[in-house]
Length: 168
Image (cartoon, rainbow, N blue to C red; front, side, top):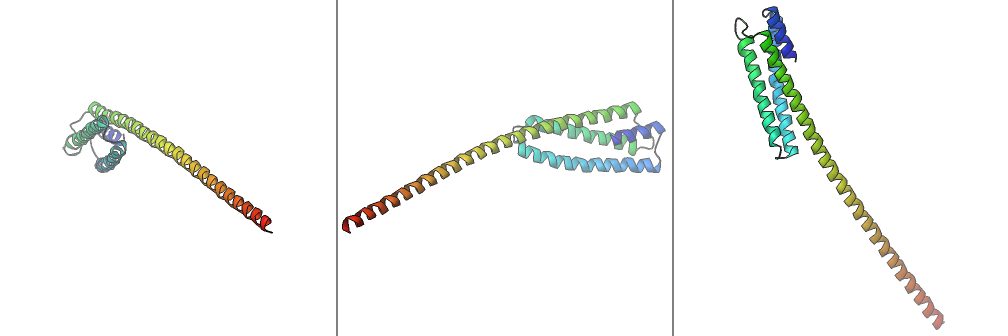
């Protein structure tokens, strides 16, 4: 969006000055950095989401190619040439396409993350219930064994008391 706005401003004003040229080049470099960070994040997302997300991978690769093409157009038609070779309408259309692509990909990413989170949540709840049942089984077994040991000891003490009364 900032790149689109700055490009539109440069085209509308008829060219660069030192400040706008520096800003546009800096934004292009920042876009490259953001692309690398986004690529790493999406690789992690795919690792978490699993290999069955082919549609997301193809959408991501398509967007990545589109963004590379946008940056290349800016470089070739706005930054590098002596005269700007991009119209305001073309610049706005290209910028709008990139914004729509980002929004669509972010929505898909959010949906994948929510799906993965819900899956992990339901799995953890299942494990929690399983652990609770195991703990209850251990508690009941331990209680039964303590009662059995107590009963055995009291029976033995009672037998010893009865035997000592008969002898004495």
